[in-house]
Image 1 (cartoon, rainbow, N blue to C red):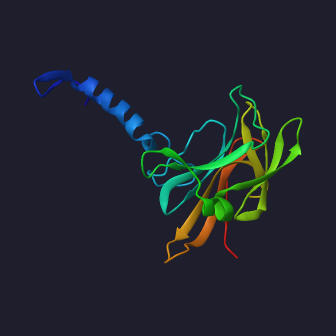
Image 2: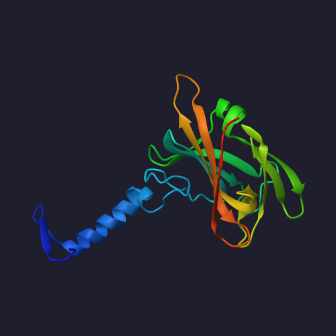
Image 3: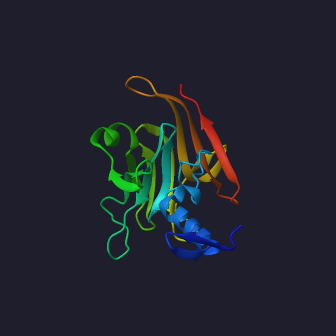
Length: 197
């Protein structure tokens, strides 16, 4: 398939070179082809891979993603005043970062946390919209910070939260929330569906 020669505007390149260039372009211009979300089977939903990322949240309404990440200073040390942050990764556009809006922060997507171990920085954290679901955020093997909470009845590293919505006039209705991660003891995938009350 990728052999022979083709002509493009008086320029001749091999079909093989063209195929390789096209594959590279796909990976750069459309990262969704390479970085499928763990939360959704829809190929438009991408998995972010940001520095300090702990987990991410996605909704069925569009592929924009809220990334939850640790913040580090210029020397690579954890910021003690505000060690965790949440922001949009706008995959429906060009994948650019955008800060949460005021109402998104105070009513839905921001994260609340408290220090549970200052020496080995560890935190108890929850989403503003769901204070009952608490996670421990701490360093795991490899030095990355991860959120640990029960998923499917066992301790797990949270990869993502997926919210299935039904769009309504003003406030979307939540149909269910999926927690997706990997078991702490081993790395088998785990998933749990939460239904609204």
